[in-house]
Image (cartoon, rainbow, N blue to C red):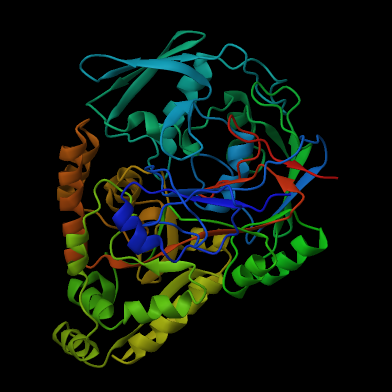
Length: 558
């Protein structure tokens, strides 16, 4: 059996080399090629280039064996699987295997390709999208329909629902006007104005196509009983224990090799590694700390650069952090380089500066200098000038993971040096999400820490973080709300000219960094432990659990 191979991929080789060099350690075969300047693995010899940041590919040797259950460990239960309201990657992994979208990202996370759609055209003025649909797609059987055929009416219903009800504005309602069914297999979408990356937004799971009967029949409970057109059906959710999926026997796409998937909740990375080594678990996601080294030493590690930004955001509306000078002082009080080195002791994370990944076409290293230098004495002085000579007490809400807890403890120390007492609130990600949504409306949550993953377009980060349309979502739990910012974001989104879009987004970066909206401190690698019995696993920069897709189909040796 060949060892796993790692292919480092980056849009800008120089930037990727400096920022992602720490994402290394995966074992490579003699046939693996990886680039010299931006290689993630020291043994790699060549690379391809892509927008998406990176992929890692597990062994695909041998003839596929059908059957069995793929057991995957992840650290937290889903809060809701409803596309309009989900907020964490843990929900994503389940939804992507049960639901489908009109388009999907390709293997390299570089281009959007058709899925439920077959093709599309755009009018000369950029305001009308005509999308043709597959004619062989059926919904999974549910309580309120018996596995009927998907039609254009379902697409209209799902996209209009996303527009009206999505907490994170996943369809860009400032641009989306309405859609209509021209025929059972054709949808026409009308835009208010030109939207450059609109099709890529339709690849997000928040715009999955759903049967109206199931959504309205279940009501608020739909998030625990999702029904779609995906390769697997939702069988059972046992909170804090497991989520079970079963192969969809009537799936329109690639027939899965495995009969089902069990997402097993294991919060401790070392326990997850033990489970892989004993054969209880096939893939352990979200490895952290020493578990990464253990996986590497055991030749189980599959690792790729990330498309996520990790940060602490401040409450912009209430409490001490509503004051920009206070936010600047809190930033000045932290030795970010030392903090990052202390959190990621196994090279699994590198320093960030901006609320964008380095492969983004709007990323410009010149704006890194807008992060204030470490200056605790200057921070004390600034706090006093802001009206807090004796400091204050503030809260930080985090998910209970090794990385977040280390970060919180370090911030607690740094901020104590300027008289600020930090009250750390650690919980499961499901509870974290519920706590921080709408938190800007009071001073209970002064700050929160999380890692945000999105598609490669800058709007997936900046639009979600700083648009007034996302005020009631965890992506903008700090309550950033500024008409000038909305205008800049709309300028960036409302053009098909990449250079013009980049200039608009650079203005966004400059504005939010000068307002000290948060501490954007790290890019974390994606780390899985994969059993030697697992074949054709693909770890993409977005960290999706891709089981049966156009480009991979996981199978497990018996």
